[in-house]
Image (spheres, one colour):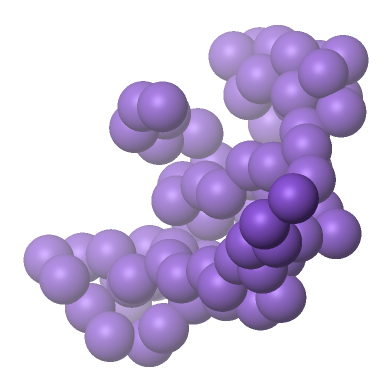
Amino acid sequence: MGDLNRDLLHKDLDHVTKELNLVTNLYQYKQLLDEPTRETRNTSSLIGHFFTNKKDTIILAGTSKIKINDHYIGHQVISIVKR
């Protein structure tokens, strides 16, 4: 876990973000959010991340348009099954 602050929203990714995508793809992690987690008057970016390699356990993931500082709150609902 960590605060990566890499923008995954735009097509022109920088070198570090491309490396992040390579690593997450290698380990079959998927980003659950696909909308901006930070917006200003002139920009929007997806710098809040929820990665998982168990996408079938995710019931819901998204961004709440409630701002804390200059970021929106990300949320996810996970299905937990006892075995």
